[in-house]
Structure formats: C-alpha cells, structure tokens
Amino acid sequence: MKRSVLAPFSVRSYRYQWPADLTASWAFEMEVLILGWFVLVESGSVFLLVVYGSLQFIGAAISPFIGVLGDRWGYKTLFLCMRTIFVIVSLVLLGLAFFDLLTPTLVLLLAIIVGILRPADITIRFALIGQALPASQLVGALGISRITVDSARMVGALAGVGLVAAFGMVFAYVVITSLYIVCLILSFGVAGADRQLLASRKPSSPLQDLKQGIQYVCAKPELVGTTSLAFWVNIFAYPIGIGLLPYVANNVYQAPQTMLGWLGAAYAFGSLVGSLVISSNRIAMGSGRLMIISAAIWFALGLLFAFNEVSLFGIALLTLMGFMQSLCVTPLVAVMLQSTEPLYRGRVMGIRILAILGLPMGLMLSGPLIDAIGFGGTISLYSMIGLIGALSMIQIWRDQLWSKSAPANRTQAM
Image (cartoon, rainbow, N blue to C red):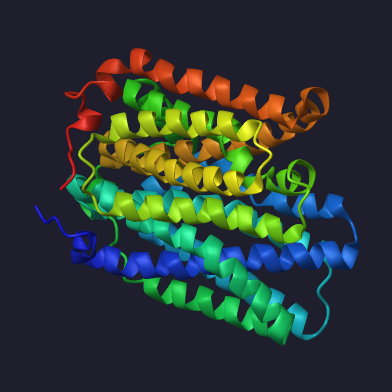
C-alpha cells in the first residue's frame, strides 16, 4: 500500500471531488458570513440573525432521507442535482443584489433551500469517499477532505469580509457564484454509481428503505457506538468552540470584538492542524481507539476552559480543542464507512449527519444554564458529562471499538 499523504489522489474520482468540495466549502463560509451580516444590518434584529443561523442546520433533520435517495439513485446523480441548485440560488441572490432588491425576508426564504441542502451535501461527500477509496486510505482521505472545511472557516470567512468591505455585495456574490460554478463543473468528474449494485436493490418504498437503514444501524454495535459519540460531542463539546465564543470574548474575558476573531481562528487553526495530522495516515492507532481517546481529551480540555479567565491561555486551549476535534470526528466517520455495506452507505451517513441536531440542542440548553449556574458551571457540567460518556464507551463497546483486535482498529496507518 502507498504511504504517501497524497495517496488518495491516485484515485481519479477523489482528484475531482477534493477541489470541488474545497470550492463549495469556501463559498459556503463566505455566503453565511456575508448574508448574516446583511440580515443584521438591514433588519437591526438579532432575532432574525439567530433565525438565519439556525436555518443552516435544518437539513440535518432530513439527512437520512437524503441518504435514502443517494442509495436509490446513485450518489453522483444526487451530488450534481444539489450543486446545480446551489448555483441557481447564488445566481438569484446575485441578481437581487445587483438590482438592489435583496431584503432580509428574501435571504431567509432562500436560506431555507440552502439550509436543507448543505447538510445533505456533507452526507453525500462522505458516501462518495467511501465508494471511491479503499479501506486502507479512508482515514487519510477523510483527513484531507476535512482540510477543505477547516481552511474555509479560516480563509473563506476573511475573504468574504474583505470582498464586501472593498468592493461591495455584488462583487462578493460574483466571486461566490463563480466558486459554485467551478464546484459544479468539477463534480462531473466524480465516479458514478456501480450500476450492478443499484440493479441488485430489491424494489421498495423510500420509507421502507429508511426503516431498513435504521434497523441496519441498530443491528451493528459499532455503528450505534459511533453515532452515539457523534451526538454526544455535538451536544456537549461543539457549543464551546462554535456557539458560545461571543459570550466568552465579551463576558468572560471582557475583551473587544477582535478577541472573538482570535478565539475563532485558534479553534479553526487547531482543527486544521489536526486534519493535516490525520491526512498523513501515519498514526499508529486504530480508528476506534483514536476517536474515543481524542473525545476524552477534548472534554477534559473543556474542564480547563470552563473556569479560565486568561485570554491567552484560552486561545491555547481552544487550539488544542480544535486539534482533538479533528482527531475524534474524522476517524469516527472512517469507522462508520468501513463498517457499512455499500448498499447502506448513504443511509448510514445520513443518520450520522442527523447527530448535528445535538449542536442547536446543546446551545439552547446552555442559555438558561448559564443564567442559573454561570458559564464556568455550565461548561464544566457539559465537559464532565461528555467525559464520562466518552470513557464509558471503552466498556460498552469494548469488543467493537476499543479492543486492538476490533474491526474498527484493524486498519492501521499506512
């Protein structure tokens, strides 16, 4: 087997998918920031800003159905359909901005469409990687793919702000639309479905397919364990680095808005470094053990972060938390893909994306908790529950996810 970091690029489909995903991720991050700022400035309503942000998650609720469609139609077909819609929506927004017709209400309406499709896009990305790459290269390929998201959060957001500030909304949307078009063109190079595999499917209704997918996950302990961990980290770990940083910068560190940028950049940088480490495919530890250990360290760092009031130490902790995030969630997806038969890949990845709903749940729960027991008390509670949950996996799924001989740990670094 190849040991090169670039080994996944020896697969033609991946050579097209990676830059396609990169341009899509950059466009996503630029668009969310630009439109969020537009909604806030034009409406003067923080509530509408929160609504716009929440709409980015709504597609997670239907991601299992997207997985069903991918398994029935083929992932490439669904991939091209979704990315065509991204181009159309961006063209509509560009036209509205050009003719000065864009309003917060129209942005929210269009955000519903995009918010449904973005989590679905991630579902199909994973399924396509699982379809094209051999098991020995999955962890490295997923790590490289994760770089597209991490780099977009760091650079794409800054580019979006710079373009609007320097050239205005219309020019910024010309760039975003161009990125979506390039993404669509590259997506045509992704490998199509195995026609024999699609033909082997027994006729059934979409609801039956979904039921079979849920039954399939429930019957495999390693899939139950990884799905549970994905939901766990979304509720108790992600809110710290994604939703609560404005509160930390303003109320805990009592710092100006620039500190928020440093905190967000630190978390994203740590995640990017973690993705680079994972993409090397040289960590001498099985994927199952790596994701559990990384999750435990991630939550332990949260305990330190909970009562820290020194901003520089907070930046260092967030960098480490971002790093452990990548070392947890990337092998988690690899275990799920390795444990799933091709006929069920889309549905299993759809159920994995469903775990994202834990993030808004964790954020909503944190609000009243912070009012009641303070930020430190809330985050320490979250982190302690998360740490206990992560460590309990060693006993609950010892044979499937922790043991060195477990299937999840057999594919070692190449």
